[in-house]
Amino acid sequence: AQSVTQLDSHVSVSEGTPVLLRCNYSSSYSPSLFWYVQHPNKGLQLLLKYTSAATLVKGINGFEAEFKKSETSFHLTKPSAHMSDAAEYYCVVEIFNKFYFGSGTKLNVKP
Amino acid sequence: SQTIHQWPATLVQPVGSPLSLECTVEGTSNPNLYWYRQAAGRGLQLLFYSVGIGQISSEVPQNLSASRPQDRQFILSSKKLLLSDSGFYLCAWSPDYTQETQYFGPGTRLLVL
Image (cartoon, rainbow over all chains, first blue to last red):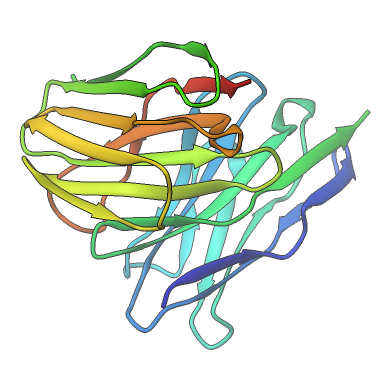
C-alpha cells in the first residue's frame, strides 16, 4: 500500500529564514513524488516533481526537494522564506497513475 | 492549451437530496481523470479515478459514485447526500502515461444541511 506522511501540520518561520517541510512516503514500487502548493482561495499549483532522474529537484519560487530513497523522504526546502510563501503545501506520491496526497502542512511566514 | 472546468462552484443541498457535479477537460484526449475531496485539515482524499470511458475505480467505500460517459467528462453523483458529504471537491486530469503532473479544476464547495 502507498501512503504519504507530512510530519508537521503547521510550520512557522520568519521572513528571510530557511523553510523545511517534511514528507515521508511508503511504497512498494518506485514512486513519482510531487509537491503542490495551495494559496488561500486559490487552486493547487505544482511546485516540483521527482520522476527517477536527479534526486535533487528544483522547482518554482526558489523551492527544491531532495529524494532520499534510504530514508523514504522527499523534504521541501527553501533558503529564504518570503511572505508570499504562506500557504498550504501538499506532498504527493504517484503510483500507476494514482495520486495520493499527504494531509498538508500550513506554512506561516512572520514579518 | 488544456483547460479543466468544474461546476457548480458552490452548492448547498439538504440531507437526502441527490447530487451531480460535473467536470470537463478541453484540449487533450484520453486523459486520466480524478475526483478528490478536501476536508478541512485533512488534505486531499482520492475518491475515484478513471483511465477511460466507462472505466471507474473507487478508492474508498462511500456514499458517492462516479461516471465517465464521454472521454473528457467526469461526473460525481450521489442518490442521497449525507451531512458527512460536505467538503470541497476537486476534479483533476493527467496525461495518459505515468510520472506526469496532475492539473486541477477550480473545485466545488458542497455544503449539506
